[in-house]
Image 1 (tube, helix red, strand yellow):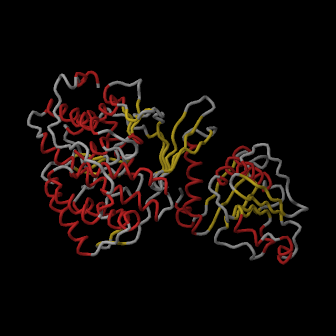
Image 2 (cartoon, rainbow, N blue to C red):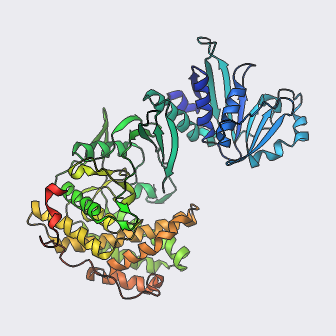
Image 3 (cartoon, rainbow, N blue to C red):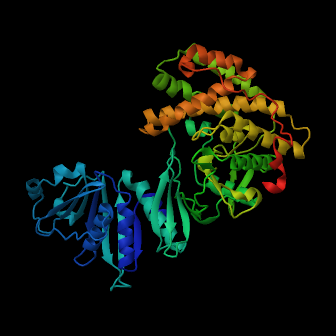
Length: 540
């Protein structure tokens, strides 16, 4: 993104041919929402109708849509998968008052509206949701070339920067002809698209704009700063390079726009570590042994991003761990359990956690990827050793206790991990660690594992409640029974007896209607050769 675009929100795009004009139209169409107005200006023959028609075809998901110019009807409407579409050509309008007769203005909030000759509407088109595109003939390429200038208000600034930036990055990286398929968005502001070349080669477009600061909630800091969530895409690039330098299968970064927050990365495919019946044990155990291999190294804390640009891994400190646990008080308690907890009860909750955290900080910290579970692990059967696991979504990495990522795996938030398999993962990890360090303290590690299991599932219960209540994403609630079961499992550890009593007293919903607690995770999980014949390193 240019300095001018960053400062003013205005973007100038050179379109060398009709195909480039159509691609611009499609890119803009992909970011339009109901209530948006696209105002197309330019002299006769500048390409307004071509741009409008390409947008309508994209919005209607119909490449063959005729979409004639409504020069005489003034407005043409379309029903589409994206809702109501309006295409207006106001060339014949002589007075803005004429728009009252055709009902265009009163329908603007109900549709995506594309307007040619918007100047004929005077001030009737509201500025807040309006994107202006001015098309001019390129004097250096008058036959086919056009120059588009795009500008909008505050609501358009980030959307426009991402759309224009993504197209520029895709073109510069040599993926201009690639088809773009939306893959998914996650619980954050990130989104992903698969780029597919005509040859079938694929890559991933990662859209990760800088995180805006939320309201200050403690010591003048927003939640994201206290919890050490990645503010920019720098964190992903830095961890990606670091993991790849160890021979692990993080995706190669093929192109990047660090300012806008856009990456084109290697497509690691979609072979999961879970099957139709749940976790594939061999793949989960390979993931546990990968962690053991990672944790036996002394790892750097300052990671390069680009020339003269570094990323410092933050500590998963007491404040971060604590504020995550408090999510259960702020969101799960009132909205799921139906209780409002008084200050004295919240204070008791914090006091208990403070004592538990003391134990965690006695162990040297290591890289903690933080979301090391099935959605972020891919199986690469054509690779060998630890490289058979593809790693993604590690931008929030911190320096924390080595048990945390094993908890993420063994208490997978998306799929049920039986207690027996969880113990196998602990055994695989502990066996690998003891193989290189006979002094590795397994009982102490198991105790920390239960503490961090309780911490992580307490946090996730709060996050899923927040995603439902605040963000309008109720789909995450289907995972809550699993999270609650994991939490109960951890609370059976004797070290957590006081925390368990707190939950039983103040959030009894967690135990309502439950049978006898599941197996504890306090036993020595060191594997024997009889139990784990596949533990040998060359079979990873």
